[in-house]
Image (cartoon, rainbow, N blue to C red; front, side, top):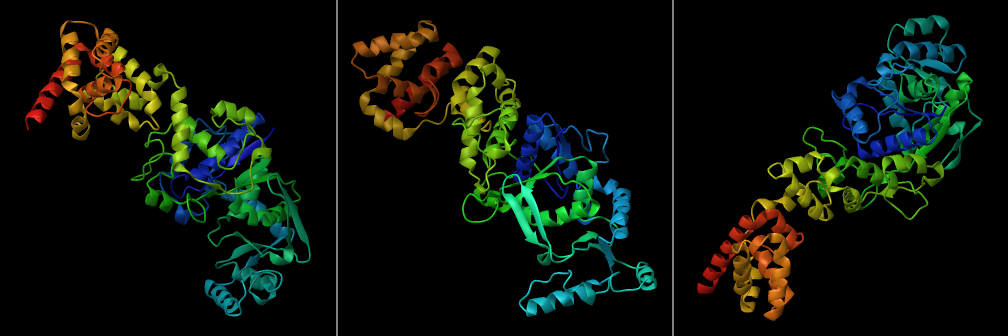
Length: 494
């Protein structure tokens, strides 16, 4: 069975770049009827941020991607937090030491800093490896008694990379990646605090959790040869690999960051994190968030750009993943959200919390009608409050619009509408009656509509005018028309 994992570090909120990686993992698992696993890579205890684990889980759940296994969902191959797997890593590092594939290194921080500074002075990049490991204090340069004595203090354990070989690994997106071992350093596998590094824990966990395909961001591509060396050292079969393209800044070079969002006024997290508003709080539907992020680096091969999560589960394919980075476009994200809102029925919209809050004081019939007429004006759920305002109270009169209307005698339109509504005629019949009257009076439809809209809304934009009148009802519509008549009379006298 295909098994994939999303393995974030709990060092803060989940960035949408990380969320997209989770989506690709989830879709791959569902397409192959496999398992989607959440693994928390918390070996860097100094960077652990309280609450970030729960935030990651809730972000996945908001998007409809509940892990099959993980810290909150359980599973037979846990623990799913790396901090709880320390004894496992100690067992497997001993295997590498016994096989001569790893070694102890006792160099102090000062000694390594000095070596690094010297390399920089010589215009070189410092690497600790086959070409210079004999110059350092490690178990390859000490006798057994010296090693045992040194082990009483601080040390790390490094991977022993043999020179003179070529490591070739096939990536499902980028093809074969080949690197000479002469260019690789002896990566640290176990830190001085006894915790594994990402490289070691990652490989051990992927093997023990039976991961069949590793799907992660392209920033991990340079680590791939080292990971393959670890698989080789253990005589394990490696999984398939897929490295995803970066999500790029809207403008300029580099990957999308929180700073870009702060500068341009858009979120970069799926949910609110402390003072940082997320896409959910900005009025995005989870299905549109998933839809948009999938399009950043993947193409279905179809013209249609709008997909539900269940549709994507069937459509997703590795062949659609692109190599090049995808530029983030907040307006495109809003447009995708708009399309998903358009597809919802009024009944579905009224189940959303944003609609419930905005329409709390209306009858069910009014709620249904309001949802029907405003949904094609919504780009995010945040827009609801603005669109609903006109049903509670009109906007202040647009004086510029009134000044332009005055020569066309808007009062005759409003007085006629007042007399029709005063007669008790139902608001539904108002449109036909007014249009017939205007035609006989040689009043243009434009003047008729603008006069009424100014009276009922306060400005010249908004949903269908007669839908608004029907929702407001006879008495409220009549009151607003009377107020407009009084206001225009005052304007004409001033």
